[in-house]
Amino acid sequence: MIAAATFEIWLLGNNEAYSNLLSHQLGRNPDYRIRRFPTIALALGSAQEGEQPEAIIYDCGPTPDAAVHRAVRQLREQLPQTGLFLISSQSDISTAVELMRHGASDYLVKDASTPDRLWQLLAQTCQPRATPPSPKGTCPEAASLLLGEHASMQRVRELIAKAARTVITVSITGETGTGKELVAQAIHAQSSRASQPFVAVNMAAIPRELLESELFGHEKGAFTGATARRVGHFEAANGGTLFLDEIGDLELPLQAKLLRVLQERVVTRVGGSKPVPFDVRLVVATHRDLAAEARAGRFREDLYYRLLGLPIELPPLRARGNDRLLLADHFVQNFSHANRLPIRSFDAEAKRRLLAYPFPGNVRELKAVVELAAVLADGAHIVAADLPPLQAPATGRDASAMPTTTGTMPSLREQTLAIMQNALLQTQGDVVAAASRLRIGRSTMYRLLQSGHLRLPQD
Ligand SMILES: Nc1ncnc2c1ncn2[C@@H]1O[C@H](COP(=O)(O)OP(=O)(O)OP(=O)(O)O)[C@@H](O)[C@H]1O
View (cartoon, rainbow, N blue to C red):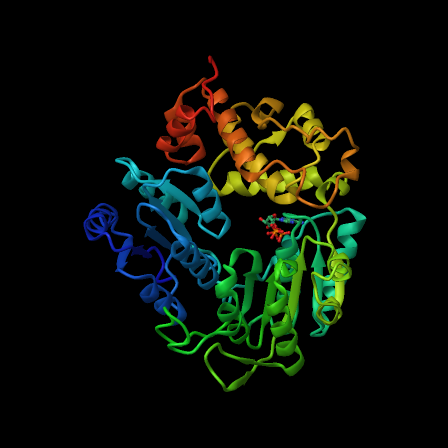
């Protein structure tokens, strides 16, 4: 970030006319310095040189394709603290959800109100910082951010401290949203590598044909589209920590390559012949039972044992007792503070509902639910009616006996629709007010109403 009270905003995209419009509108704020990048490669190049804008506005065209998804991931990896706002005329909610999963901060459907909405988003994002930015990709307070008083979480913190003392490989297991990445960050932050890079890679989010070059890099001309030499994640994490998320999704041929790389401690870029040594601490995570995958022949046994290192198991949120309320209070306080909302506590009925729901999406879901409740609440407390409909999957089983696969979870799309439906209920069917409360495009809501995915309350 540049000098105090001047915020650098990057405009990405090749629609020159629209870029002119945004540049003109946003440039009216004297605190913003607007820079335009016609290609992603140029922006990534500047980021690699250490430049860090406060926010990026990326006009990703009428239909965000695989290249846009890749660009969003790369931008997020390079610039973990930058607000990343996407604009497109594509109003399909699943596209928005997917891009936000890759790291976008918000997704706006392009319409006449887009410049105004960007103005608001930038006002929220561009706040003077009290502390200097952390080293690339790390979160120095990650250890203290891993909240929880339940005995299982205290044990997790003990294991993190032990892992941090050496460079042992750590394997983290736990359902989606239980905090696996936060644990990886905490290990890095407590280790002697804390000032070096922390690089996180989600194996499940990278197209199969690109994974090898993403991990190990490629030489110029190695394949169509390889217009320049690219350093892979192993080299990028040199001296620091490489977090390989969803390692269980790695296909067998790449498992063999990864095993060789780990045995020899060198990578050879795709299309290259020179072995490049690297020094990384590896942390891997999966929501799968890797031992069972190895027994079933889907995961190489030799790689499994090489990766096992120090295993850390994160319990599902529903097995952490009152930690749910502690986390709920923490998220509401943070969110309210950041958005200048009055800080409210949960009333008894709202607490009862939070404790009764099994949260299949774990901490990530709890965070989304309570932040929305903080937005919707009006009175002195957050009450049960401010919470979106929390419906446990109708399995008839005890919540604590829920399977660890994602099979019975409501999908992210279903949860998103439930949140929108609740906003419509709270605003008595006022689409504009509901969209603005949720900070999403109203055209998205109209489309979902038209297609019957959402209903107006009086219907
Ligand atoms: N114990 C915790 N204390 C505070 N915040 C937490 C805790 N656990 C998770 N979170 C927050 O919940 C969200 C999800 O956590 P994280 O991304 O680490 O989960 P994950 O297990 O890696 O998810 P996935 O399996 O989908 O990759 C993040 O915003 C994280 O900061």
